[in-house]
Length: 101
Image 1 (cartoon, rainbow, N blue to C red):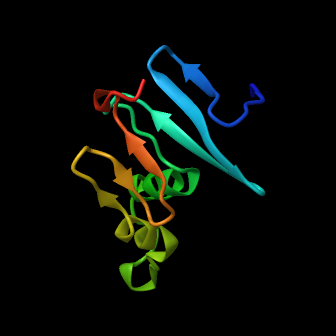
Image 2: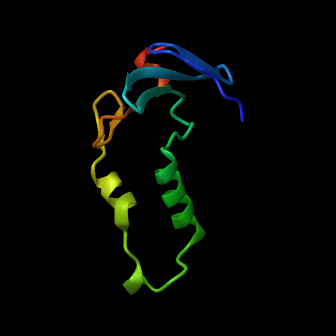
């Protein structure tokens, strides 16, 4: 694992077309902005894990499945007119077409 230090408004570029920017540092929380092409999926790890579990198929009967936090997080997301996705905790993902490079 590569470990980097960045300050507010500094960024890291991955594979020439993905940029991760430190947007805000507040206490023990760091807000990151991710600029990536639309075809590149970007998820928080808990969402990625939920998607991976869903793709693996059901492993128990439906009566005992609890949708839990992943379903709640999906319900809290909103797609804005510019293509950004905003979750309940104000994370935002935009494609490169929004001119944010």
